Length: 101
Image (cartoon, rainbow, N blue to C red; front, side):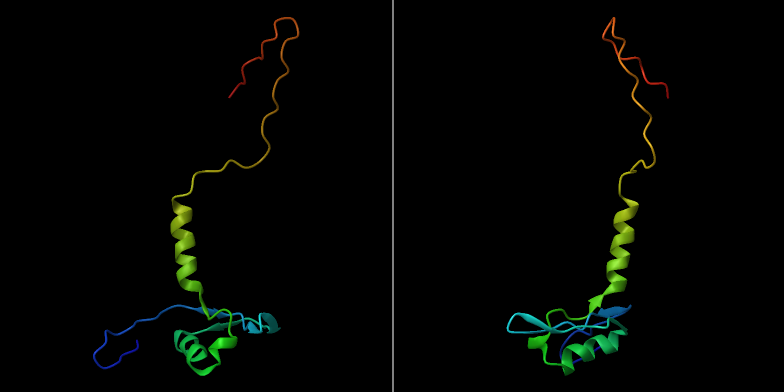
């Protein structure tokens, strides 16, 4: 939790990911390895480093994971596996036999 005089407190939780991508003049000059960070470490990365060179600040993995799970619970069922073969139409009648379930 972060507090400042006259301001509401800020509560951070979870795991953050620092990809350690640094750019200079629009080109990637340094990267990785990725590191997992605590909320305190994530804020420190933002506060202590030259933010102008940082393309991406630490990513809130816990928050993203929670959203993925929530969205997956509402996702439609997607059938997987082989589909039954379609039956050939009868050449005399041009009718396709009904699929059996």
